[in-house]
Length: 551
Ligand code: FRU
Image (cartoon, rainbow, N blue to C red; front, top):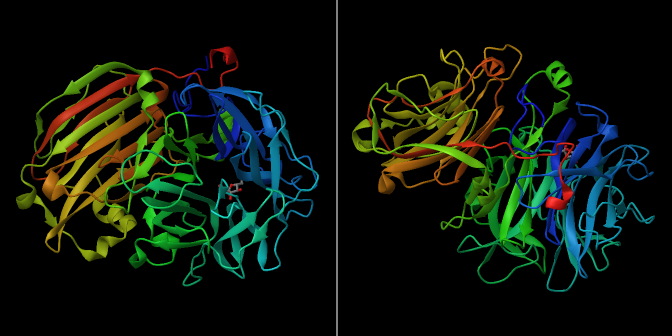
């Protein structure tokens, strides 16, 4: 087994060594889960021209076995890099990839590849037909901004559709292409989406487009449409390094998307955040085995390049999340897939513990650098204690900077968890809520504050946060789930309505245990009505001796 050091994670997906970024082509096929990913087989740093598709397989989305790379930059249409793309299962159970290649002139083009033997349960070999590229660069698209085809879906007319990110005449767009045979593709005149150019242009990447049921958490195959179906358009935006999404209605005849929350505007940067933290380039797939939609996302390193070279690796994936539509028809819910519970070992808990103003309560009895924590906070005196909200803080980044700080005293909150804390609290990462009163309603703010996460100088230590869209006046409580895994903290606020994923590099972790606390820096008290914290076992993730027969 690999020793956990330098922030290596115990139950998050990462290759044994080297660089990884975006999840590519996630797929469930013949009883096996596949994850492909942007991978540099030659070292721990990003190298645009060298990217391959790494490939791992799993029986449970928790334990993974590494296989050889599935795509390598060996052909004129991808020789400068096999970039991101997606998998589609064609009729007759034939898995196919659509992916971006950078060609001999480093121009971005779209390619197709087919599983050489669809009956091989491990789908080890992939063939690139000689008709590639199947979509060359259009004249009005910038040569280096045409990429990341989505999973394809079928319209009522029997034609395949795919959405591709493109800069069209300088405008960040999501283009639709149609095909009858998956080889010859034709662009629809109208883009599915375009973000306005002003005041600052967007660079769009990694579109994900999928149906969700209007009611309930069961998922739909990517081609589903009709009554009771909504669609989600997710876009990654390079300049902000965030993923944004919008729920809407999709017309498969015109190939148009009508946003549900038109008031948020056309610029995807004002849509809902998929994750307020450092997760990026998310991609989902329909998991027919458990009838759910599962989403992956890349989380970059935020230490120095020198650290990455010393570690020999860079980049992890979020723990796979089930995603579905909230009853409000506007927001997604995200939750770690149930299989995570197979890793839960020792459990400790609290019930009905009051945390007074300024209180700090340690959760002892588990190794908390590898943990899964679920907690419900009750707020008995919401009305008296909530401070008034200044509309100036509507920008969550500003709120984080000015009001977010876990260490300033507030009214209702900051309260939450202190994780990956050293014994002397010199190092600590706060995951917390703060509730404000605004125009007769309450606004719940959630934040992960990294400013004290490490005593090391060369790591980035921002505070990340945003609002949680819950009815706290009715609930009088809010839930928080936090996955802690050495260098990653993934938090789910309000039942998965707001997520914050961040990386941390505390120095104490090399030589001593980390501590976990519940804290309250508000002037009103909070009641931990329930807390359960589990120590997590180490999953088998891409270690050399993985047993493929055990899948
Ligand atoms: C997103 C991205 C994609 C591109 C890939 C290259 O992180 O920039 O747009 O295909 O990474 O590795």
